[in-house]
Length: 82
Image (tube, rainbow, N blue to C red):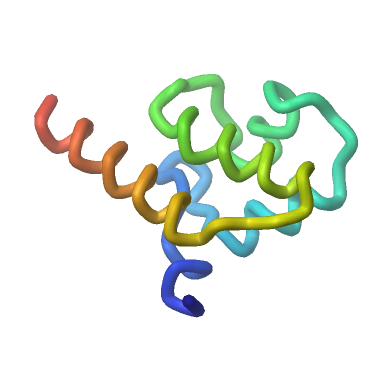
């Protein structure tokens, strides 16, 4: 599980899942603005894992395996486009 927490959620901001969780916990901003705190960009490349993580933090329970799956799926899509 510790390995999943250190997985990079978005290449734009080079932020890990655990760092993103802390950022989301410390803000009361809506998703779109909170996302900018994590990524520092407006791109939609990591929308699915970030939105899922944002909602999990808001709900109070985080499924690290689900987040890892979404990150891997995003990375696979990006690699297919290259």
